[in-house]
Image (cartoon, rainbow, N blue to C red; front, side):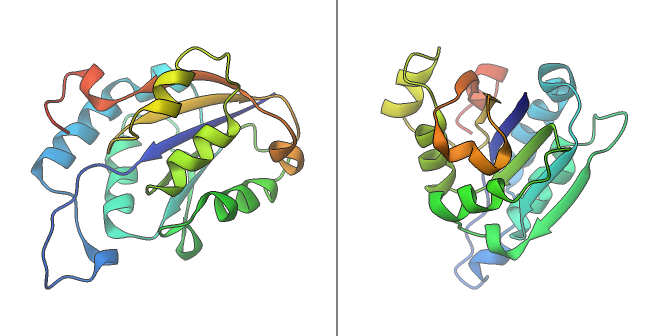
Length: 173
């Protein structure tokens, strides 16, 4: 069985002069990502691959969040994940090699939220929170994928975790 982890980038700064793709994390975003990093290896185990949007805020989230792994996972920064919608994200997941057992996708809303809702089995713990709530910056979800990557969109999958940063102790992140 495969595991899929989704992580929305942390809070970024808004600067009207900066290109959206080049917006960095703000102070709260960096602090929240450090909280995520503190327990991430224990919470999800090892990672075979990280697929990350090429946006600066996503790259910075990846760098900080993955700092606690004894064996750093392979990270691919992909332009195609920048503001990718649910359909594009699903296409990318279907292309994964079957040898990849555990993958983390770091990206943006609304695509990540839509992907999570489309994948989650309605009876899973946390499904109603996921489906009826928001997908805030820094939120992490984990799925157990019961199919091949190529068939990921053929069925729904068990949602194991829905972890907003506020649960980890961050205020208003």
